[in-house]
Length: 327
Image (tube, rainbow, N blue to C red; front, side, top):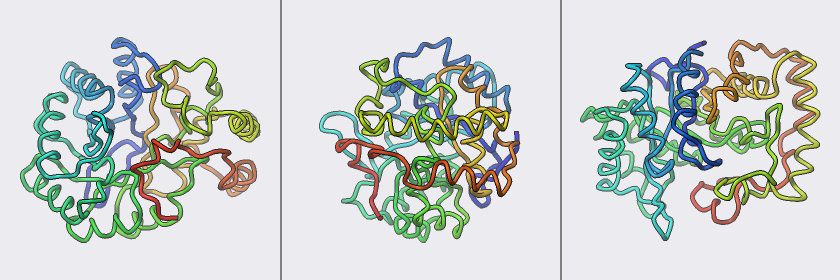
């Protein structure tokens, strides 16, 4: 697989990483054997960049990843996150004490003494971002982390944090049906030499050959409360994506591979992290890094799925608390 730099001066990683959120059960039940199979398939495909968080399955994802790395002996580039507090009431904590305590817990689950990238998962508005950047800078100096990142933030937050200590990566949702980062975030990253790591680059399964069926989603599936997966929005979104799906098929590629190729084509600093619980789903988008889009491809994709085509918000009211709003 092709390689890309994880931020200016950062390590080289696979152009496509693996998001490990689903190993924690947020999209439905999973099991250890299937999760390990998906991780093995990712490594065999050349994926060296793995993204997890302390809250994914209350530590399950980190533990699964740590056990797999220790058992297989792979030297992967690992990113994890801190900042969301899930115990009621749900909130955010960017204090130095909390960041440090959660990092130590994450390192134990990952079975290591260092992670390449440590994100602030959500910003706590009550604490100035300069203070948070200072905390992360000290962790870099102590050798606990290789660099730090920010998630679901606005352009001004990126620039303020970067002025204190260079930000290595920014992770916001970005795909053909979520284009908000184009209103300043992707430009800030390009200007400052920061890697941009799109999460949910496949629209939480919508940008695939076999679209999800909301009626079959389990009780724990986070998509059940997302407006884009609810009537009447869902039917409108399916109708729009059907045209893109047909275009991918006519080109001889999967819908997921073409959707990922579009993200990769947006800039050399893009390192998308699609997620999956199974090896079979992962294989649907392998090879996306080798797809080359022509000007006519770009024009047709823009015609089929123009910015803002998606019906409904990406989050419900409760989930929308946390991501910074700037446009």
